Structures are given as C-alpha cells and as structure tokens.
Image (cartoon, rainbow, N blue to C red):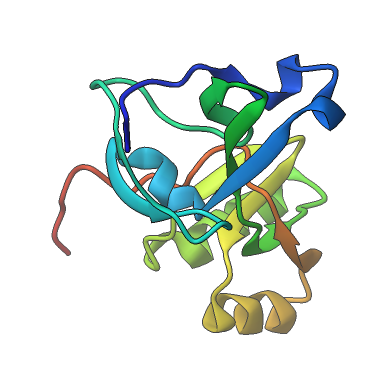
Length: 150
C-alpha cells in the first residue's frame, strides 16, 4: 500500500481506545522526505509518496478506516540542549560552534544541536550550561542548502 496524503492527526481523535493502531516510527530527518519506504510495528511494508510541500509530523494519520489507524510516530533524538545565561555566552557558543556546521534549533532561550562528543567536550571545557537529553524534536534539523568555502 502506498500513502499519498495525510488524512489527519491522532491529536484530533478523542476516543483512541476504540481504534486498532499500527505505528510507523521515523527519525526526524525522515520527516523532510516526501518519498519513503517504511515498515510498521506490525512488520508490514508501506510506501509514502507525498505531494511537494507536504511534510509528515508526529501523530499524522496515513490511514483511518474501519476503526484502524496507521500513525506516524517520531523517535526521540540524542541532543545537546545549551542554555546560555546571557547574550555574551550565546555569542561565545555560536562562535565556537560555528565552524562545526551543526544545524541548530532555538526554543525558549535554548539552543538545541544534535549530540556530538566534541561539542560536549568544548561545552564542558568552557564550563557552559548544557544538558544531554533524548527528546522528540518539534521539527527536523534541516541541512544547509547552500555551500561555502573557507
């Protein structure tokens, strides 16, 4: 079976106990892809082929018929959450991490980057406030879509 559209989101269904659920687990970078071949937790293979501009997100429904749901679930990611205490610290962090070309997300005064042992060493060495956590990202890290040289 190939899914060509998102038919809803599990967050909009109030009576989930009335449904049989089949889960498709994806990593956050898979959310950026329009065409995927996936395997569900019921060991069934499916294809996903979405229109351009459509992206999956946690809880999206690919199937909702006869009290059966096929649900997209996003795996937790290993990340560093950096919590600068002021703008100067943020500048130091940005300068030190800039050449590593890590994608970053910013949320509530925190910087979130994918886990990297060298980055963690640098944060420890500089005595900066951070934590290593496994979290579900609200959006996938996007790769830089332009090149540059040094």
